[in-house]
Image: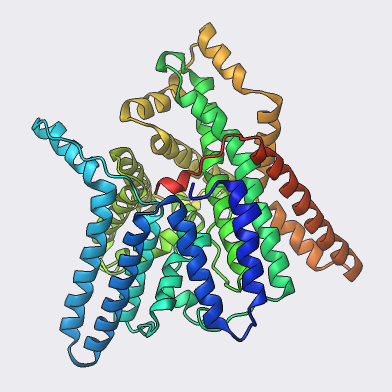
Length: 474
């Protein structure tokens, strides 16, 4: 991580927020400069060299945004060339730092050239801020936004620390006005803090508990994996990745609101989906909408027939898989989802009763995440095979499975499953129609609960417990 969690929560964040709050509301430029300095310090603390890469990226994209806007007036063809060149440069930077080793290793394996595999440290968050920069340039070319005259605004848009390292991916047209006009009242600050505590709870108390079990099982010998071990690992990771990433997104949205920014939701209870198409409308919404707006639709979408539309979907999900990591397991995971989206185009899956649709969707997503988590194809396919055929119960396998079913794991598992459902939304709707006194008591109770959960999270973090962030790798 860029900071240790405790340092970020107990030192960095309070100091930045206090300084930000002292600055008068009308001095938005000074507030922006403070957030820029804080964001650069936050990133440089863990990536002292790569902060220069990020700064170079912002300067490059700011200048090309201005160039594209200028050429749109008199020479649209030249503006298109400038856009293409800028996108290629952005993708080239991403390719060198993220995929060089993968492609060289692949070529070496296929051709047997005995090539030296380059070892390049991956700059944290490069996938996220590169996609934000590309969306800015495309929006300028499409005249959906004006090219910013202020480099500081572009820099803040790309480097803002709540979402810099692990998203969500913010599109410029969604925050353009907020960069120059915003305010955070007491209610915004309070709700932002509560949202941050909720996200921290998802990450520290649920995702980390699942992670310890999942890593233990994926680190075991394949000979110890049977149907019980495979399903505990698969379901554990299904919950780990959701609460890890949705937890981070909640923290980012909460922090952003404390500083006056309103970001769109990034998750909408994806595990209640009754189709894979619906799943991608609910999962990592900022990424799926990015691919839809900036790749799928420009490729032609489904406007040129089912065959071309199906090919476009495969291209999108190949790219989506590759975006997630420099490994062919991620690519296969992406194509796996793309294949089921194609099947849903031709088969009446959407006509299934809702419960059957949910079971189908969860099964596909769970199997896909086994490939996503696996270190190698061999490990991934073996775990999947054992999920459906591993009816052998040697002592080692049985012991390994039973060791995971601790009281803590079982309690957290039950809480996690309930939290995957929109129960919270149902309660909020009931409260919204209740009497004023009940609403006030419920709201106060939610803040007290958030404070208690925050305190428990701090105890967990101070104990030096297991605390990996999955999406920091991307």
